[in-house]
Image (tube, rainbow, N blue to C red; front, top):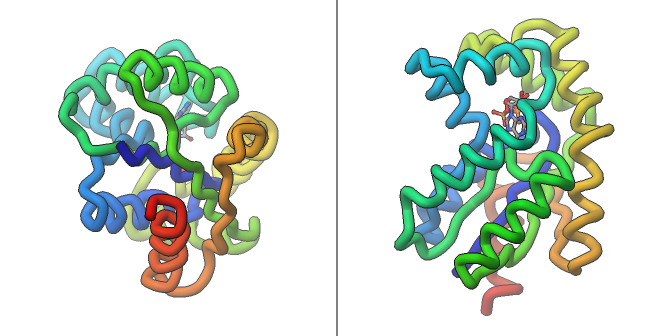
Length: 192
Ligand code: ADP
């Protein structure tokens, strides 16, 4: 299996690149942000809970997020591999993911981390807020909070994969196709 953690701050382009990667490598896309938004839209209990955190720029609690991710992954038992987008966002989530994959006799192949400067992130998020109306992309204070949460709570996840020698940084600026090519080159050099 090819199991990729696509990592990076809010607005780094994880969703955009995931869509291209799943097509090329025939992977299943698991985006916790997308799953939460689908639950909000569907008016589920999980959606109501998630929204109360997302609107503040906070992380949804680990226990809820992990359980949801695992049940979503179990919906595609025949997958050739997964792209984890927006997950894991805490070291506890990373550990849970390792255990989950080990129980399926597989593991994370690599972490690809999109690197984008903070000013560029803020610009992209505000633009997305204007175009898509995503609630958490409209208020500059919420955007700042998400970036701060990323630095404080999520960046340690990078060390977790670095310690396993699975980390690759990828420059996340330039055209969408240029960034995609960098990601593919990193995958192909490891997988071949
Ligand atoms: P972005 O990467 O632009 O912040 P996402 O769609 O990945 O967008 O996430 C949106 C929000 O959903 C996050 O700010 C957070 O509140 C919640 N969320 C997504 N993934 C996780 C996760 N793995 N753990 C906790 N909360 C999450």
